[in-house]
Structures are given as structure tokens and as C-alpha cells.
Image (cartoon, rainbow, N blue to C red; front, side):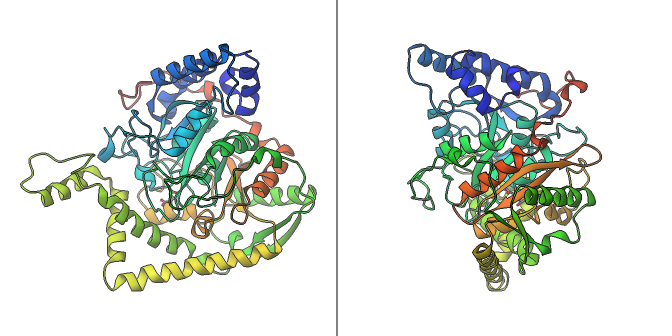
Length: 502
Ligand code: GLN
């Protein structure tokens, strides 16, 4: 097995025992990026020099006899809507193409302090709005399992980088499914933590009442390791959880004998593809075989979840993005007569069509009259969905459903039909509306070899149970061990963008 293929849990002890230097491990990943990223295009920026410098510093520390840190020498990819001091953070938008943040997001600081090495910033749908990474203003990322298909979105670059061994693990952000859906499409593990568990400070805000940063990893163990480091109270985020830090790795026990698994009956109807349904049914049998009790439950208001989500998220996005006015930072149109036209022209040219659609929709929803009509109703639905979950968790330990109704679709297949695209989020949106944690883990492949994800949801701040159920399933299956055959691709083709420092 090559060094770049190792997960965090396997690589960390080797670094600790000095069988592998941090520099060797980092170079292994950077070489992998060089070999495959021209085709996959997971990265917007590769931080070669920064990474090598940090790796040398880490080796120096270890050679001085300093104790290894929790993520010592592990290469991490950061979604490009998370601020990194001195490293471009574009949000995959023309608007922020040259934005170099003067500060680190809290998660970035925590990762670097824990010894992780940032190898680059990954592609996303512009400002995290989308489900395929096709609305990136830079280029679409390709799914490593089939380069004709999307990796999902919006954290598609992070998911593709992890499955292609272009990073040991990655951070994504999830407002309506952007960690779990690409994790499912690429065959990796993706966790959206409980709202408030991980600091949002330094995340470019999309819909602030739902945004969460979370781990995207090769397996559940790595996910717990990464969560251990980033789940910390942060006074810089007003919604940050004030509880004590938890060691999530202690819940990696393969035992679900006491677990009651709820299956929402509304989630198994129209829109669900046959291959995903088949894999999901097999996963349910597996969970039962492992000792869990499976029961049918109902989420009666889930039919309205998607509509409520797009009303609330667009309204919040239009308000969040008002700060991008062409004055303080970001893209500024030249030669305008006054500041109002400068702002209008800058925004017109700087944003892509999906972002503009959300701003127009959000502004309309927040206008007088419509606010009461649409926004308030969406909030009511949100409360009802919250209560549906509350009721279910009185009887069930967790809920399970597919992560997405289909496997990864083809590039170009849905981009012209926003409503069709929005349907990819039908199973991932309800936990965001209710602030609940959700994880996607690999649970099968379709007849064309594309990965399928299983979503597990628990009550708020019960990541421990979430990880235990996920771990038990993972240990009893082999889906997470399968890899795309990257070598069969021609890694020498030209990148569509020459300035990526790859
Ligand atoms: N696809 C959803 C949207 O476009 C979710 C995005 C996200 O979670 N950031 O809003």
C-alpha cells in the first residue's frame, strides 16, 4: 500500500514511531495531487510550499523529542469557503477570486495546532450553493469513480480529494447536505455535526442558521479523530456549544444490540432510484443482523422540508451576501459613475447564475408582504419538522435513510434544471432544519460501480451514538475499502486552469 493511501488511524502511529517522517507523508500526498488532479480537479489551490514548510517544522519538533500532537503530520484539504490566513479563499466565486484572508477560521487554527498539514483548498459550488460542484466559477470537479460524473456538492472537491488519496482527510461545510451528499457520491464518510458543535468562525456564511463545518474521511475512525479536534467551544461563534469536549474515539465499539433504528416511511417513495433502494434495504438487513431493532416511523412534515429549506436558505443567503458590495473587499467593477452602480455592476459580474438566483429569491422572500407569506410559513414548517424528529427520538436511538435518492449523476445532466438539482437534497435537508447531526457512510455500489451512501441521524449532540452505529456497520462491511481505479485514467492531460500551483 502506498503512503498516500493510508487513513489517519493507520498513518498516525507510523509518524509517532518515526517510521515515516512528516515530510515523507506530505510529499506522498503532494505527488498524488500532481499525478491525478489535472483530471479530477479537486483543488482550487495547492499549498505546496506552505505544506512542505509545515512538514519540516513538524519533523524538527519530533526530532527535538516533543510529544506528537493528535493529528501530527496528517495532510488535510480545506474547502475553499473556510478562511485560511495568507492562503487564497475564493469560495469558488469570481467575486472572491483574489481574496487572501487576514485570519484563520477557528477550525483551521485547531487543525494546525493539532499538527495537521494543510495541502490545499478544495473546489465547491460557488459560495456553497449547489449539489454538484458544477456551479463553481473555477471548473467542475470530476468524480474519481467516473470522470464523466459529478462528485456531488457543494463540498465535491473535498470528497473527491479524499477518495482519490489527494488528502488523508478533509473539511467540508454542510447547510443542506453539502458534506453528506458528496460523501455518498464519492464513497467516503461525511459527518455534519449538530448545529453549534463546531465553530463557524471564518466560514463564509451561506445560511447561518444551518451552516456547519464537518469531517470528510476515509472511514469512521478517522472521522471521530478529526471531530475530536474541531468540536470545541469557540467564543467567536455566538451559537457555539458550551459543553465539555468529548473523546469520540471511545465510542468506536462494534455493538448495536440495544439500538432501535427508525426508518421514515416517507423516504422510501418516489424519486428513489432502484439501485439506491436495493442497497438501502440490504443495509437495513445488515443492521438487523448486527442486533439492532428496525422499526417504521413517520416524518409527516418532511414533504415540505425542501421547500422550507430553499425559502430559509435563500433568505439568509441574500442577507449574508449583502456584505459583498464591491467596496470593502472582493471584486470591484472599474469605471463606474457612482457607488450604487459600482455595487450593482460588481455583483452582476462577480456572481454566477445560481448565486444570483438565490439572492433574487431571498430578497423577494424578505420583502414586505412576502416575509409574512413565505418566510414565516417556512419557519413554521421548520418547527413542525423539529417536533417530528423529537417525537421519533422518544422511541428510536437513530434514524436511517439513503443519503441521496440517486448515485452521482453525469456532468451537465441537471445543471439546467435547478428544481431537479434541488431534489438531490431531499434526504439531507431535514437534519439541517432541525439542527441534528447526520453522517453518510458507504453502503453499496450500483451496477455501474458507483458508490451509494447510508445516512444515519441522531438527536442533537449525540454524535457518540451516531459514530457507534456507523462504526458497527462499517466494521461488518467492506464498502469503505473499495477504491476507484485511478491509474487507468490519463493523468497527463492539460488542466483547464493553469494557475493552480499544482
Ligand atoms: N445543495 C444545497 C444547496 O444548494 C446544500 C448546500 C450546502 O449544504 N451548502 O443549498
